[in-house]
Length: 147
Image (cartoon, rainbow, N blue to C red; front, side, top):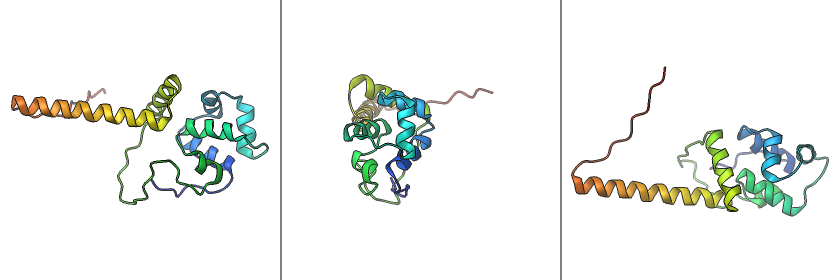
């Protein structure tokens, strides 16, 4: 993931990532457990959050606390600077589901994604193994074509 994101104020970084996720201030404030007005004050620089609040906001946004605080650290703890790395963008609905799971389980968004990937890999390996044993390779499920 590239870090070519604004390296301005903490409020600018919060607003940039929140907007990129397609979230309203009210939505992020609810995820973090604060009032929308307080989040707005952070975004415009009228108030500075305490470190524990920065941690909660960073966790909700799926970025590292260090990056959110200073803009210099990697945006997330697993960032590998590689411009050729392929990414798959997640829809706002998928992100909301991941954040809901993180909130429900008390895990960080990174931990939830890692667990989901482990589960997906295990399911794929099981399907491939079953296919090899049966002599039929699995195919990708067809998508419904609603018109």
